[in-house]
Length: 116
Image: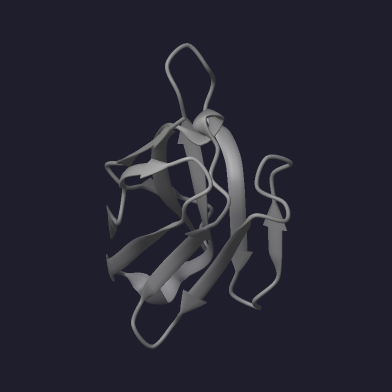
């Protein structure tokens, strides 16, 4: 099992920045890919960014150029630096990890609210 705990969400004005963290524990050696998804009311959960064990990254269209995903393997922690935030970035942000057996783990989510 892998446990994921997000932190760093909150209320920020448009144009501001936030950094989300996701701390992993448990069978962390089994984790290949980690990532962030988000979901706002009435919408499907959407990809924000993923980072593979190799360090390769992919971003959803809404995150490109504004968000940066990173991973500190020594601290078993993943980060999402979000800059130039917009009201449409308001959502619950979820941390996810995929193991070598392709099991998906999810955190409980952290709320990000961007005011205009």
